[in-house]
Image (cartoon, rainbow, N blue to C red; front, side, top):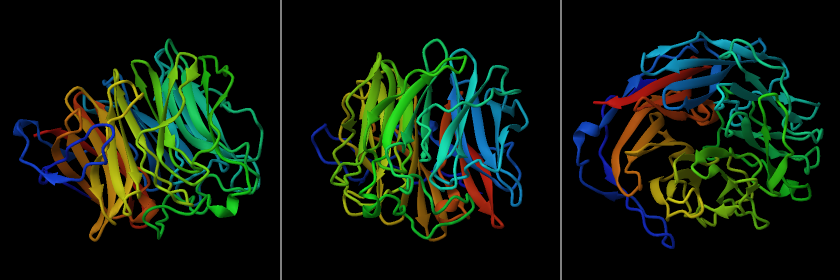
Length: 447
């Protein structure tokens, strides 16, 4: 891994109004304020052992970071671990803490555990656990800690269907006053043999041959019931609210993403129409009910295979940005769009990157001064981890930075993560070192 220390040429991308087509990249002058340029610096992580992969990274109030990952060395049971970081003190507050260990834990490069903090100070994590002989039979397990992660509750399942089918691709958000909200892809309506998550490549260190996804839910499963999107809430005592079905037919193995707006949690995911259109949809929990899912943009990407490449959302007040991967224009693209009304409507997307090298696997963040977008490219000299720093309205690109060049290829590098704290962007990703997965980190700081 080689971390970049210089910003690359700045590209300006103009965003159009809601009915226009996505805007292509175009040349533009340098940023108006060069003092706001940022560069990537190495960020040493507590997960130093080979076999660490599948990170999650979240910001707690902008003053603390939570990092989780799975440590899965050869010949040993996988372990879900976490640590917390003080960005003001530039120090990790805890050594790696093991939350759960087990041979039945699902280790999947695309369907990864997540960590979150609720408003009452509790920590929450989820992971996946096998529940039957079928590779598609696994459940979401949810646990909480009320002592900063030193001890964890007995896990519960947020779903009660009891079917030997897939449940995963979870998003979590803090509920007002305490407790947690979560959404997941739910396979209760699928036949036991129907594929739901990425069934062929569960080893985090394996590099796949396909750059842009895999066929996980094509015509071979057309006769099976569809994967659905469901949600529920859980209080501090791990008591579950009744689950609700948000969408009865969604893309089987793309990540979901959620962010808190001033009007409630905004949830984005990849839909799946009867005609196999795989566009990104958005819905918001408006009081007690979820709004009718609507396209972030009508890309019209039709494909019979799940691209294993979900969207990412970030929000601040009523503003929200969503980034995603698509091949609607006939080639791989990364797009980003903004909403000023908590996700009810989105402006036309900006095409941030396009071409056969684009892998996607996006992450986003948003603050008062800028929007941040992270994505991967499969390049000749190694995978490139790229960051675009844009004006809040996305109309102007302040900076484009190659954060790192990775030694891993294909699926071995998983999905990078991005979080803001103390005015600094923090990035975590999986790489490969001498055949074993390893975690790397970088801080994007002012020059």
